[in-house]
Length: 492
Image (tube, rainbow, N blue to C red; front, side, top):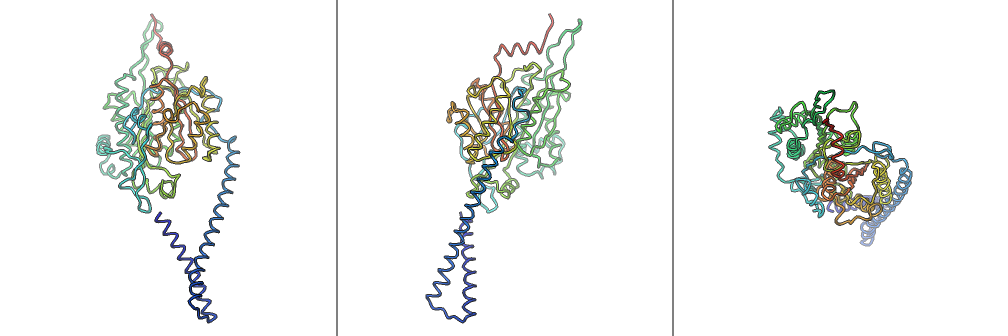
């Protein structure tokens, strides 16, 4: 508000100076001796009138440009509906389901999946950060986690072979992000060991000889922001291997890699790759541990958002609230028969992503989301919109996102209760970056498993893409036993 007032006064003074120079110069040239009435009229009223006329002209031109832009956007949106692409497979092609064995997270709304799911039902508004300021020196709205243990991160990196000087030069947001991913990683690795998921399957008998299949393997994928330096990626792999060793996982059962991700799109693409059958087929189950961390609670990140015009402020109602978090999911692709070697907690049945022609005009956005939902249902044989009993999204304080999600629910999921069946992480957790897809899957899986009903995950945080995913409870115990017996045959 203060900056707008200063700009107004500056332009008023500049207009007055120009008028004064012209009038006084004219008087000097023609030799006019102005009286009091002329002074008031030409040095007072005329500058104000000139300023008012210029302001009206500017406002009129802005309205004309806005109408022309909206008309062009509507025409492009209408044309883009047919040209927009969906996910990673044709809309009518069935998707391979992916089992969700376990999940963990650290978000401003809670330190585990169940607590976050409960907190986002009654979201808390973001607060002004005490230290972070925008380019004008004003505090920024943010969602953060108190008491992030960055000292534990530095100790873990040192144990993994990192140099103390290099570790201490890491920006604050990177240390915070790893500080949040540390407990998530430890919780999931501990669950893998406790559940004995990497144990060898039962041996089979062939030709009178017992052949023992190799034990399951753990494929770890660590997603980090692509603008982080490559040195931190190498250190992250070494750190994870050390954490896995400390948890009791053998080196021969583990493969770890870091995947740079510039946005949520890379995360969804990676999940699609997990669903693809391996060639040649793996003789033992492969557990996929997918981890992501991100934090925008640092001076560099806030400055970058502010300079790009993406930061929420009084002047930018469509700006984002910087957030932070970490999330991880343990996944298992279905076998050739559509079953799972291990009983999943929930199943990611299908998802679809729109990457071209994305519009946030309310009417067009709702129509595009309906079309995307149709693609998801087409990829999940037998699925219907009526069977979806809840929805979780990453919609935040931006009106465009809230309006799109609400309109989509009203059109495609009108049987849901907006108060109890529809939850959004963005209001409480801010913009979580590449953590958002994994957190949405984890929350949807928790809700689906708790209520034994399908849940829709809707990702709308990114400016130029949106994703819809269907997460369902696992098959009945009888079906699970049948699938398990077929995957572990025994001779009598």
